[in-house]
Image (spheres, rainbow, N blue to C red):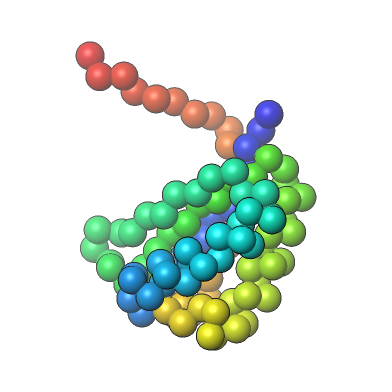
Length: 101
């Protein structure tokens, strides 16, 4: 099975506020069939986040993006969001794990 990933990047006003809003959106992720996610923060920019959410299908990923875009218009639901999120749908081409020797 090919994993489809939604990759989102955007500036934020503060991580604690952003993370609380992200956590409140757990029901949205559950009903949208998100299989898992990773949150990353650049080491040189604490006011920026990168989120990757995994889905089983491209259709689920696309439907989730539509729901997110509607959510992002509601500033009460996304109080720490700054700027316009950049979104890409990725298909995993290869995975590798390095085992220490």
